[in-house]
Length: 340
Image 1: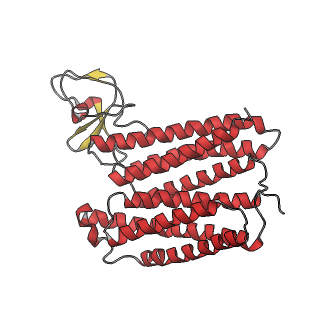
Image 2: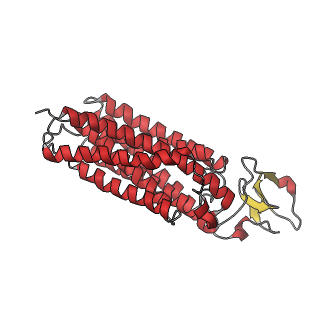
């Protein structure tokens, strides 16, 4: 079991990132309310594909918990029954978590796939935690952190439910995203603990210090970005997706901070890669950072100058999470080396 633990941990990490990508796809397609209930989807384990499945009709078998749309409301079956010739409201109860009652099969299945990927990631984290017992004698911290990830994944699932119940409240979406980054950090830390010390990296105090500063700046930039995203979401509710050119006509001050701050983040990482190459410190992942940063800035420019082209916000979000994870792992590598 001990031999397979690093591989299982990497699989869990990849799946958590796939959840982030799936979440970005949900956002890109506007599918956040594709399944208006949780954890089922319209009361089904496998969601409906046609509105007829969510419409009351006489002589139809209904099971407890199944959902129909009637009179612009969601109704939940209170028991198992077969409908008669007339609608009997005694078998139904109005869904009270929210008042969203629309069905779009594409949105439903995009959101359903997002939940399936989340469940798969949760299962992988649970397997990782089981396998971590093989390392208990060597490093108890690995086992404890592995089970912390399981708890955090469960908590993240609950947060996902609150996002649905709030009909995609921007603040709750932000908390959901931050929790995903926290889970990524813990898994990366576990992965780093499970590997031997790195011997190919040189020590440089200045590089290490600036590396920590760069991570703090990236996290600050992500937080500023979530504020801008919340503003954009609010503007979209006012103007709609057909008037995206109006979204940033009168932006919040956080937008200007976010835009200007990107140059500071770029500058600090240019300093890092220059020092890394000049002193031959051996941090190869600095090249990843620069490529991710270039894509991130490019996607930001696209959003500003071309009125948020389809998918640009999602790419921006996914790249930011990859950048943050890479920088965090660089710090872990710098702490897990044999100082020469």
